[in-house]
Image 1: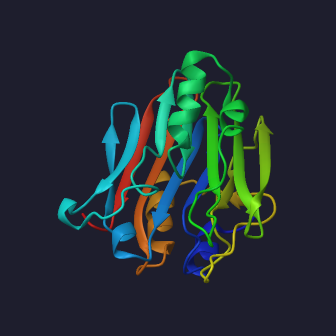
Image 2 (image 1 turned 135 degrees about the vertical axis):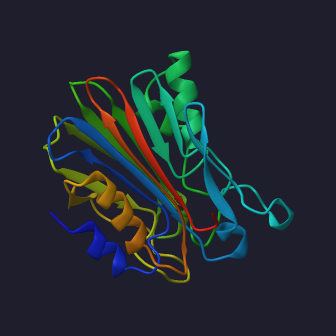
Amino acid sequence: MENIFELLKQNTYPGRGIILGKSVDGKKAVVAYFIMGRSENSKNRIFAKTKNGIKTQAFDESKLEDPSLIIYNPVIKYKNKLIVTNGDQTDTIYKFLKSKKGGFKEALDTRTYEPDFPNCTPRISGIVKIDEDFSYTLSILKSDEGDKDSVLRFLFDYENPRAGQGEFISTYVCDGNPLPSFVGEPIKIKISEDEKAFAENLWESLNPDNKVSLYVNFIDLKTGKEDVKIFNKNQ
């Protein structure tokens, strides 16, 4: 297992990232999501709580330029499932579950990578089943090395995941121009025992010039009780 704090400290720009895992005592789901930004428009954001998750919103509305791709609902809860993504595909997944059109995969089959050529930013998504039969799934939709006509779809299922470990996936390998998309399987990481320290260390590990916001949630698998921590550079 990799040390997520060291991985992030060594990477100035992984972009947006998702961590899904299980606490050391095996009693809680662990969900984390962070956003970073290079432009003023991307950096002008915060995470705000909603009734069933979080949303991104402009910190200074007067400076908001193009809201597409940066204003969305990263986290939405539906019954015993928590959805976390880096874009408006959160809403697509939620609508599919609610209307019983299909599930996580079927919803993402209707989507593709983000229309920001030449970066072709991948859509990364996760869904967590919150009960004692705990499982989660991660997905990445991306172009084939910048080819606008080729879409690669990867799905990673984790059944009965082990306590004290998780998986990490991000939009980019590192900084660059164009930005290189994440490659390979999600990275297996260690979940530390101290929940407060885990969240704080994640925030401190993100590049100080590029980090924007972080959401961390430890969810009791038996009761569904959530312990949400939100960090915003602009607040």
